[in-house]
Amino acid sequence: MKLLKSTTKNTAVNAGDVTNNTGNYTMTKRVYLDHAATTPLDKRVLKVMEPYFSEKFGNAASTHFFGEEAEEAVEKAREDIAKAINAKPGEIYFTSGGTESDNLALAGIMRTGKKCEQLVTSNIEHHAIIRTADSLKKEGFETKFLSVNKKGFIQIEDVEKALKKKTRLVSVMHANNEIGTIQPIKEIGEACHKKETLFHSDAVQTVGKEKIDVEKMNIDMLSASAHKFYGPKGVGFLFKREEIKIEPLMFGGSHEKGLRPSTSNTPGIVGMAKALKIGIIEMDEENAREKKMRDRLVKESLEIKNSWINGGFPKIAGCAPLGFDFVEGQSMLLMLSDKGIAASTGSACNSEGLLPSHVLTALGLPRVKCHGSLRFTLGRENTDTDIDYVLEVLPPIVKKLREISPLRGK
Ligand SMILES: Cc1ncc(COP(=O)(O)O)c(C=O)c1O
Figure 1 (spheres, rainbow, N blue to C red):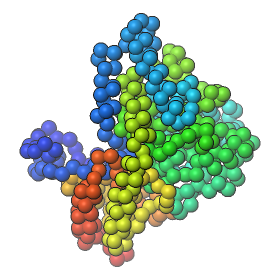
Figure 2 (figure 1 turned 30 degrees about the horizontal axis):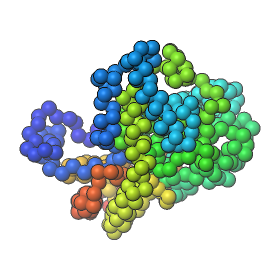
Figure 3 (figure 1 turned 180 degrees about the vertical axis):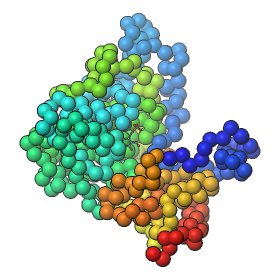
Figure 4 (figure 1 turned 120 degrees about the vertical axis):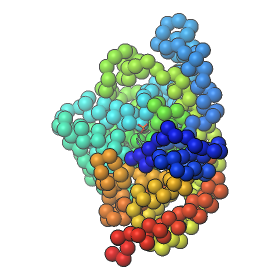
């Protein structure tokens, strides 16, 4: 949901200043703490992408030197990405992002089977999975949504119990986008393979941020999206083991072995490979840095009375999903935004109305606590100074909202 409408009236006085939708005041500070939604493009990534927009603009499918130049870059990116997750280059399919990869994995597999077959997933997946599963149900497939425990984790016994002869695919996300919980993927994959069932994981929140080895982690298919790891928007990939047959979602040319027709997004693909390389090289150091800042943010925020953290650990490094009684998350977001701090309520709010987040509801959180929840997700540009600022601004906002809250004392 858009909190501030864009304005054509620009009265900014300093670099970085912005006006609100009324144009009445300026913000001198901008602290971005919504990296689970998207990340800024790394300048090193932009640099390697640039030539492929202009002088190396060829269509990778063309049989002349412009095409060959682009094709070489696409295939080099495929090799690098495959290596990064311990897969083979021929197992990487370029897509437009996480949503398409998820749709392709689920619908692609299920539609190669019989209508009586089953898809097992969880009730905390991203809507790209949940709504694809709902749509497959309408097509006649059976779907089962596994519940998570109060901390937000899938229990292996529940996966084992759900696995039937008719189960064709299990899909469980690596890390959750709202609460950051990292699922026991290796063990879930192992349970699936014991029953000769395929295992897909939506790793959109972890690729480039956590170590991924599809062999060691028993993953047969995996979805990723470049804009979550400081790469460009509108590009992602699906890893699919060579021997697995899937149906395409779209029909057209023979790009990506006919599984994903349409002219290759060469700059995007080149940028994604570079972003992943940087992510892997800098991962340990960056995660340690973000974890330290996140832990301080969580610890000091929880000093505010009647507050809590959503979901248990392990969590992705920069994720701080917090909750405050007697306040409304959307109001907190607006007030933080007025102070130049960008956070999120996850999927607590959508265009259909103020529905509580399906993820928080799955944890067993009552509706009122879902609405008091807020997600800060840290990233590369954040510093201790940003955390100091949030810790200075957040307590008075919570206090102010509580003073006017009709929920107080109930
Ligand atoms: C876990 C997860 N899966 C899928 C997606 C969709 O990715 P994209 O925006 O690239 O379509 C997101 C984006 O927020 C996500 O967090």
